[in-house]
Image (tube, rainbow, N blue to C red):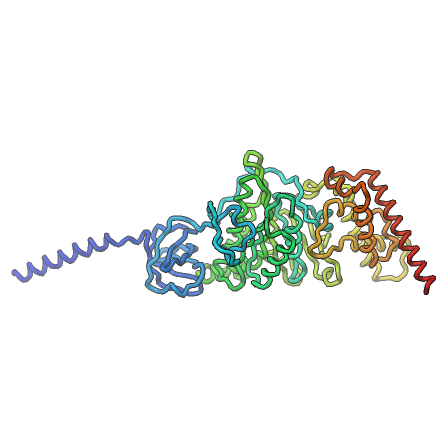
Length: 513
């Protein structure tokens, strides 16, 4: 009997100790790594973890909660997973992923977490912002009515972009999408616009060339580069555009204008697809997860122009999307077209034929339109899109027959002149006045009697003549935003003088021969 009593008392003691032990285990804030691989950690515990929360692992490694299941937590890991193994303990931080913001980032190249990767030392930031932030409410916004000058004639004249607008740059691989964005950044010099360039899934060598170009044109001083290269894990590529937007929002809330470029969101969608397939989230169309539209809409909706009560700052977004064989009706392109306020479509056939930039005026559109355009540009370019449409229609028609009437020949000649005038070399953005004068003289018909290959020589001579005159009308147009009849007459007179000089030189060359 005594033995049974001892056994009973011993079992009760063990039960009490087990109960006490179970109470000591806290699985709400601490978890254990069950499995790890491909930048994904499956964790047991962390009962109170929130979606998007930052989780701390041993050896100063961090991850973000992406999946919350009944028995486990799926966590996307930032950086190397070499130092994380099964059985490691991890804990909640109680905060979401945040990035450093402020003027200290200007001129720097950082990763998705805001850490410097340009070898220029630590960034002494005084403030941090969460990478994920809710978009401003409708009442906190105001209409877009101030132009963001790109310095590219074809855009500023036909598809104007306003401060606070979201304009998609779309086209096949190697058609000049990034070149348009970089030229726009270079053109913001002296215009009090801060730029953020977000590189997603690009080669590091390509980014190095971009950094070098921005340095050469003194554009890096007002630019921040956020880089998640192709060598980075999928979580870093997924996080990059959100971090870049938070960096931009710091200046927006100070009442400043910011330009942000996402290069490109098709690679961002692929990174997100990779991430969620590894997390065993159900795939949908083209294996993309069901919320692929939402991740881009909540990103791009953060770009807007704030109301005056909130200091009136703006973020202008230029997302880039790559198409396959010009198919703009594919899944990701149509998603982002429906989110943005217009698109610049770069035609590969036009690009291969030598038209640079290869902007297709028929498929490109700005839903803000002339509301974000200076009146002086609106007046000189109001018929430009229609004339180009007539030219392309007549060009297709002319291929069926050789006998063309004078009216058709005139349309073809004039259209060819307009297309040639809209050609522009990379890294050479123009001022508003130069764009206005070039488009005006092209539309006036005064260049129609010049050979197409000589048009840019004539425009260069005209530019030099205007600059050399004491009453520089460029300065007047840029300052007053006006181009009156007297100025037009002055420009046409200069042009006629240049044309007559060229004709005399040609006659002289013929006589000498």
